[in-house]
Length: 220
Image (tube, rainbow, N blue to C red):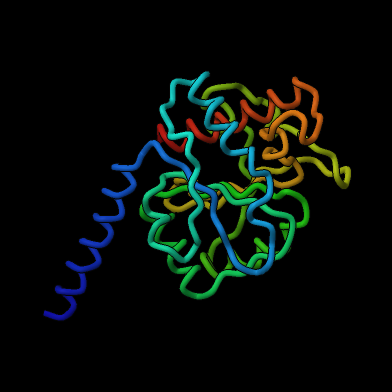
């Protein structure tokens, strides 16, 4: 009897999360985390990407970008969360459990390393999925062709250490539920042009790859 009741509660909660994601299917948010890292970096990036998507790939996403804390139930309002920064990241047990439930309920997290984030986020993701590793996403994956073609994989936007850009992911039952872009700096390419003075063709690559991510999340 107790087991049956618990099953009903879990099913109700899971269904509520899914409904919530569906109702707010045209919103995205920046993920705020603890640890001292600058989660707020690249403030013009996501607004510019959303506008680009609305203008070019037929989305109708709210251009009012909200901020949500990783441990808050509010994350379930957004099908797509964007996370960035340069430094330390810390997830409490409650944060990790909340994020895991969000991702398994149909949510998607894009983490864009703004340089220096990688050693911290990879450690914290083990709290979320102890038995899963970040694995390289093959160049044949649909995310590289959702709207624009990137046959060579993730584009290089900013140079830091002379390393090739990598798109790493966590999968569950065949679904990509988390994307970690490393040594690319997509968000810098989404920012207002005067922030980094990137050439227009570089910004265009960044925005097109971003549009692929958005379309992949909203269509799949």
